[in-house]
Image 1 (tube, one colour):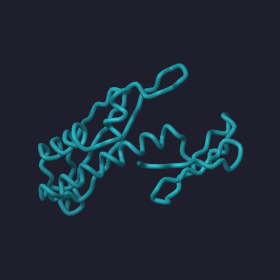
Image 2 (tube, rainbow, N blue to C red; image 1 turned 45 degrees about the horizontal axis):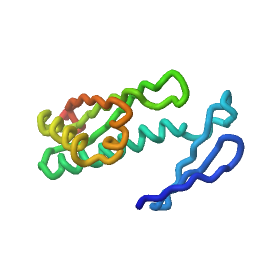
Image 3 (cartoon, one colour; image 1 turned 90 degrees about the vertical axis):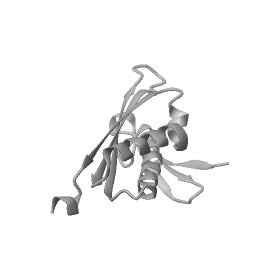
Amino acid sequence: MTNASATWVEDMMFVAQGDSGHAIVMDASESAGGHDLGSRPMEVLLMGLIGCTAMDVISILKKKRQPVEGLKVFASGDRNSENPMYFTHIHLEYVAYGRVDAQALARAVELSETKYCGASATLKGVAKITTSSRVEPGPTAAA
């Protein structure tokens, strides 16, 4: 079982903490009664998704002995126009840096999406998740 809690600080600000003991500050915009001093909860949801899948992908690439020098995962999401404003579509873009084989990257993304990432498995029942990936030269590859 995984546990988390959110403690109200003031107005719309909360500090959330999970089993690891690390905290995340969440807040609303000033127009929504907050102070804009933390991430929005839906941003945190996307960050959790990209963190989960990024850890899978980097682990798989390392196991495949790919010369990965860096990895970035970008997420963009479309939300329902009415409450509840859940994600209807999420696109994940993976960018690996270094002399990584593009097919190895694509396979790592596929494995994360279909086998390993619990966040993706949870969200894809509600949101359509699409992916793209590409390889860019890393710092040593460009030198």
